[in-house]
Image (cartoon, rainbow, N blue to C red; front, side):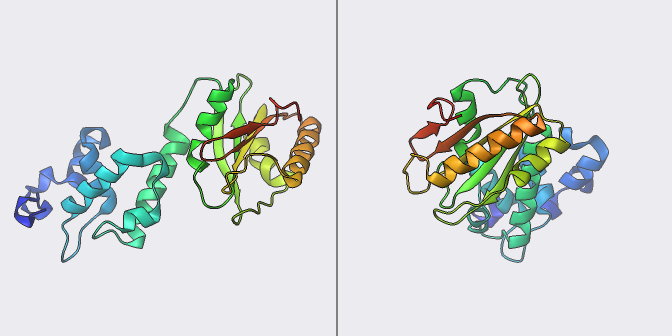
Length: 224
């Protein structure tokens, strides 16, 4: 992009710069592009903040739910610190601002929650905490394993669910090997969680294994 075609922040009147505009009118008055500019802060000697923000906005439009630090840092002008700041903002928004009031009931509902881990190169164990109406309270990555090794203890999985007063939980993890059948370790963990959930009064509703194109539900296969 030609530098002369890029909107330079320093050329804008002070009151029209994103940070000043946010202070005067609040964040809702800013466009998506301006909000990204605020998060980035400033550019560098070779890349203007507006250029960086435009490329970040394009990346978010393509895949905001599965964006990585590596992908952000491929953008000219995005440092490790800037990518961390952007990822932190996205995660906070996902945890606290994006509320889904629809209950997580069907297999399709559950699979939608685990879509982001299908293509991960390491095993990710994710837990969903649900309220009494099976609406999502929180979604958390509990552990990240190696290519084919995922270790977890029931206390790690139930700790947040207890604090959140969850009525039930659902867990899911991915198999990078694309082999969807549960391992002995997967079955053993599920049985431990069923027993722990019964003692705690927070039942495990399902354990879902996902790959790039397949899935396996412990509930549907009568393994719980």
